[in-house]
Amino acid sequence: MTEHVTLAIIGGSGLYEMPGLQDAREYDLDTPFGKTSAPIVVGTLEGEQVAFLARHGIEHHITPSEVPYQANIYGLKSLGVERLISISACGSLQEEFAPGQIVIPDQVYDHTHKRARSFFGEGLVAHVSVADPFCPDLSDQLESAVRLAGGVAHRGGSFITIEGPRFSTKAESKTYRSWGMSIIGMTASPEVFLAREAEICYATMAHVTDYDVWQVSEAPVTVEMVIQTLKKNTLLAQEAVRILARSLKRERDCECEDALAAALITRKDSIPTETLNKLDLLVNKYL
Image (cartoon, helix red, strand yellow):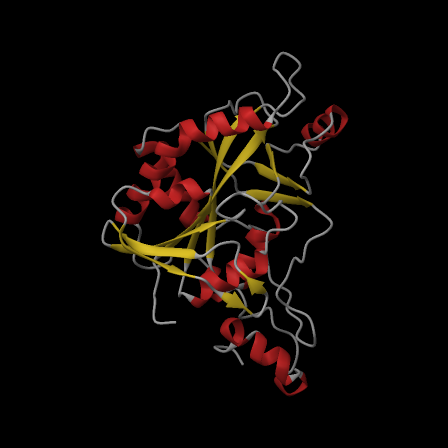
């Protein structure tokens, strides 16, 4: 690829219609991990190369469990992406995170069980550090952009990822609250872990759509409720992305770009050639 994309956005297909996006072009990528969820749209926004990818497909036909997370991250990496913003819907598990507000979490709890969580295997082992899974520097910049766009932003909190596609029972929701979880969604994992393995900075703009089902004074969460809130927040998300693209730091002030430096454990001469070729994009600077 000849692209060098400054910033990538994974979210709903509505973000493809970003006002001010110029010279838009599509990349229909087929990676060693399959095809991406949708063609990746790359264009110029505020003078920067920005990419957009619809996580669930253009027509939202892919369930959270079926999202090709590996292909999506690999595809963005192949375009030179170094920073990635996830825009997602979430339920609130805490009173102070109200519908319509934004949470930029600093922790994640993976409660899924069907998904491939790593690029590695097949003769190449890596143990990447994800003690702090979200890039703190990019999260700080995202928080500033959301506030400048007029949004109510909460910095920090634990994001639990459930398998879905169903919503939680009341017993489950109350249990997650008792664990100290802040928000709940279906796509943060393994996306955040794969981004770290790809040495891409990753931050989440989580749009609170409801109080899940623990809040008895509120109506139980429905698809209609989620969609209505997301539609209201689309303009906020677009403006925050525009501000972030305009103000993004040139240099990365974090450890994400060297995440694999101390993670690879297999000797190069023991790695199958097929695996080495498959993962060359991720490991060639070390092997």
